[in-house]
Image (tube, rainbow, N blue to C red; front, side, top):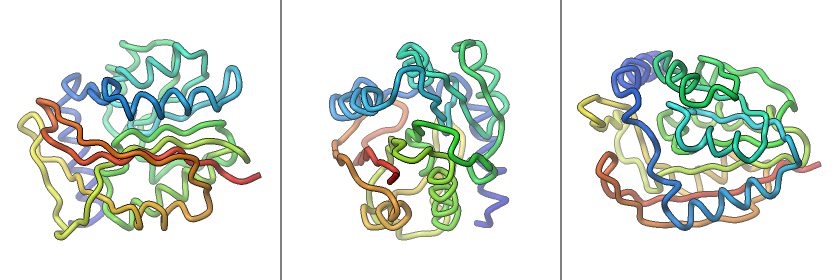
Length: 209
């Protein structure tokens, strides 16, 4: 599937899915623990970029509640509209992570199961964009589904919509973030009515000084 088709496919799908996309992961112990560590690692009133913010619940809302200055980023205009309604105290930008051009603007970047909507080349590009967006010594929270992708057209059905979504191996993740230090890595099996059974991998990373 070509890059432009992946983005178009997912934009249309998430526009249709809308508020049903609210993340169930914050209820998972390992995820919640690493999220807490991420927040505690950031300075007071830190600038945080929430990549793939969806409808803003629960991640963007939790970041704002923690006192951070948050920019939510999403490819879907419907998701951005919902997030503005659900979490009006954040700022929002409607674009793909592959199109951002921030340079050392954020103390933290949150990418909760959003990078898995990219193929490998786009994934590597996005990880490079995240690295550039972080201030020196900034932190990054990454959550993905772990595995070995054995087919290029990694389409899955979510709420009746076809979404490009693929797994990533630990080696692929470490390769894409080779310039960053791994602070902590956790794994868990996560089950939800919307996304089914997933092998989750969550990393807390830090950019060097």
